[in-house]
Length: 261
Image 1 (cartoon, rainbow, N blue to C red):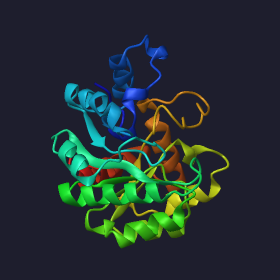
Image 2 (image 1 turned 135 degrees about the vertical axis):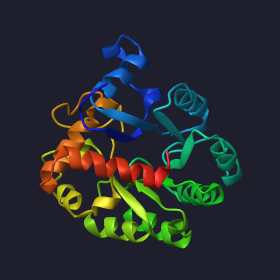
Image 3 (image 1 turned 90 degrees about the vertical axis):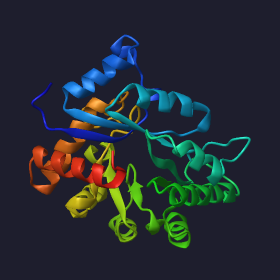
């Protein structure tokens, strides 16, 4: 047990953590998170080849949920159809579809396959009535355009690891989406993002690690893990002129409101 604020890491990749600091033990990494006040974690799937690993972790731990989806950068032999995603999402430990979206930073050429994949995920989310986890990078206009065209507002979700401007945040908020901040918001260069973190309504803000990626200050550049979500909460509390306990309470409430888990 811990007397620290109850926090939720709304986006992490527990199947991909660097476990060397924990002598190879995922359970040890999870206990480290719990001892830092992390009461729940959402283990996010990025390819179907490793979905079994993701769902197995969730099934083994009451304080972990899972998602199902294929990251926009993953090139696969067979594209995931909405029907396949819906079937996998029927598992009670799956609370969301994704991560999905568009990433033009790491892909080149004709990216219509990315856009088609994104559409399939939105169709699946609406079909199984589970929210979307959206990744977007250097694809601001097309991401919003597809969300609008495919009526993503009908199901809602979260813009994960948000790094865009207030204009995009506002458009996502208008479509019933939440905005989630990762360790990037703690970086000294992320001045515009810090301003967005001040503006997002209290009932639409989430926090995450995206571990093992994007460790917050003071661990920037190192492998990340869920225990570090408290540094994101503390930084956002400072930006918004409130307490970490208040941010913990708000983001926990928002997580349950969105994912029902």
